[in-house]
Length: 102
Image (tube, rainbow, N blue to C red):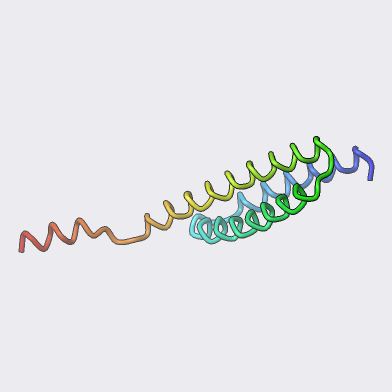
């Protein structure tokens, strides 16, 4: 494929991704984030494998950058998912205070 076809596919994928994610209800954002984290883990593993087979300096640097950015994205996704799940847990401090007053 030539560069223009790849650029066209990239731009179209941005629009499709935006439309798909913007139509997701708020209730489904946490499961969607968890699924995306699993995919990012696979992407990081692929980047590690490709970087390990790099023979020139440029692919090695780009691979290391891909591993670094993918790992940051992966960890950040898990942190956001954890914070979102904390919102749905009952608060224990409120029950303890109410129990002391009775």
